[in-house]
Image (cartoon, rainbow, N blue to C red; front, side, top):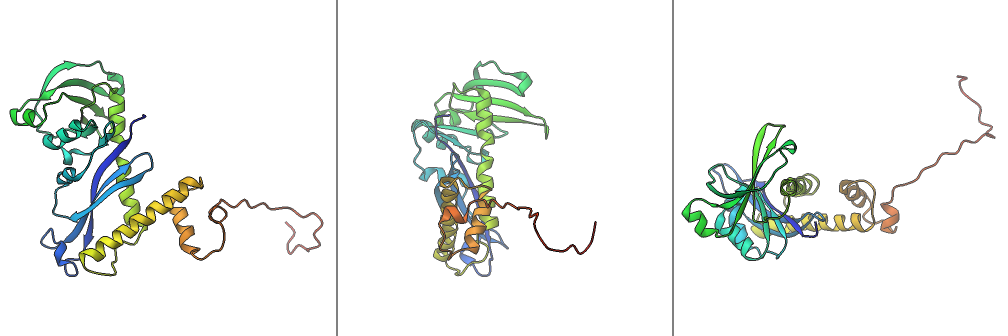
Length: 270
């Protein structure tokens, strides 16, 4: 697609309630929440906001500026018609999953490929008066049957022309932001902190995100082999090497040459 596609999601970073009492969000746990807007062409985070873990995900949408013509992919935790209206009013598009209690009034149906798993493709409006007042635009509902595990997935979007398989494919790309969170938590040092103040925690998280950005840019521009973790490991063990990066991170090409004129005696005859 020519449109920019962004995935929105958040992850909770657990903290010790004894050391970080200001970050409490349960009776026995503390933590902060990292809200992330990920550009799926990278994948590169374009916007990150760190808040208390008590904050609901959907409130972060009030702080975002939406880019006209872009797609914003998010799970049903962000399903709020007043916020979705802000996306549509800015000229952008969203793809999300419908909640189980959605009431939808169908106006017309579009043809679907039943063999590909699509069960319906309908255009209409929210049925409840409060929801229709909050979102006065036409709404599209695409129902898709997923075999493994067996379940129906209902997607909502305000784009009325894009094919139904593209809608499902865009939502599938949302998993990229989950992989980003796993990479950040698994490979960078944000489990043990050098300070206990809110500023110290945020600073360390921002350092981790900065490291990810630098590694991702180097990996992309130098067209390096392997994954980002390999590049991070090589940079970690060679911090003071006076070797150009493209030579340090390149895949070595070892060749072995058989010497037929060797005078070395054999210890065993096989």
